Amino acid sequence: MFKFTAVAVCAGFLFSCLPTDAVLAAESGRLLSGEPIQPLSVPTGLDRRKVALGKTLFFDPILSADSSLSCASCHDLTAGGSDHRSRSVGIKGALGGIRAPSVYNSALNFVQFWDGRAPSLEAQAAGPITNPVEMGSAWPDVIAKLSASPTYSADFRAIYAAQPSAQSVTDAIATFERTLITVNSRFDGYLRGDDAALSADERKGYELFKSYGCASCHQGANVGGNMFEKFGFLGDYFADRGHLTSADLGRFNVTGREVDRNVFKVPSLRMVGSGGPYFHDGSVQDLQAAVEIMGRYQLGRELPKGDVQNLVQFLNSLMGDTYQERP
Image (cartoon, helix red, strand yellow):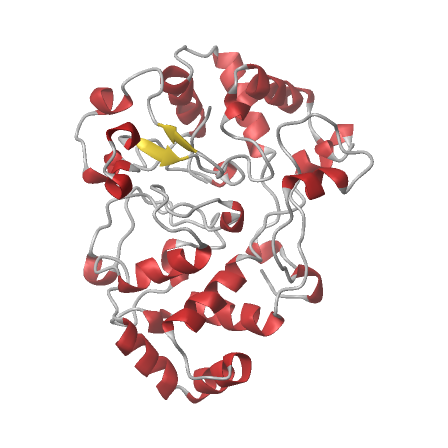
C-alpha cells in the first residue's frame, strides 16, 4: 500500500480518451496475465491544434497575475513533472500548503489534487490560475490578456470559433496534459513479455510489491491514482510526525466527513524514481525511507532492509519516457 507522490507533439503522440485497463491488457499476446499492473499505452485522436495551444499555455507565465509563473513552474516536465519542493512557491513568494504532485500520467487519475476536489483535468487546470497563493489571477484579467494577444486571439478563434474563455483555456491545457503519458518503461516491457527488461532484483521487488499487498492500492496502468486511502492505516503517522496542518486533513477538507480525515487520493507510483520529496507533505526526500514509512504505517510492519532495496529497484523500473525524451 505505498503512497507516494507521483511532449513533444508529433503525429504518434496525439491522444483521445484514455483506454481502459481491459483494452491495455488485451493489446499484446505476450502480456503477462493476472497482473495487478498494466502497461501504459499511447492513445490516439486528440485535436493536435488543442494540444499545441495547450502546450503553449502550459509554459506561458501570462496566466499568472504578475506574469512570473506558468504551469511548468510547479510542474517541471524536465524534472519528473513536479518542482521537488515540500511546498510550492507562488507569486510574490507565497508558500503553498502541500507538495505539487507530478503532472505526468495525471490523465489516468480518477480525480485530481491530493484531496480529490477536482473531478477532471480541466477543473484542476483552473484551480492554480485563480488560487491567491499560486498564480493569483482572476479570469477576466486572464481573458483580457489572451484576447489582447494577436496570436492567442487568432488561435482561439481558429480552434474554438470564439475569443478565449475560461472553459477553452482549461480545455486546451488539459488536452496537452493528456499527452504526458510516460510510456516505454522497462517494467512495461517486462509486462509485455521481455523477461530481460528487469534485473533479478527488480523482479524480486515486484514480487514483494504484490506479496506485501502494495498492489491492493497501487494497481492499474497508473500504479495508483484510482482510489482514496487513509494515510496511517495501521499507525498514526500524523501523531508521530507532529506539526499538523490543514493539508493533513486530506479529503476531510472537501467532504467534512470524519471518515475522510487523513484520507488522500492514492498517488501514482509511475514517477517516484524522479526524486523526492514524497507524500503530500513532502516530508521525506529519500525513496528508501519513504518505502520504510509506508511499511510501518500502511502495512504495520518494519520491512527488512533487503526487501526495501528490492522494492526501490522495482519502483525505479516504472520510469518511462518524459517530455524531453520525446521525438
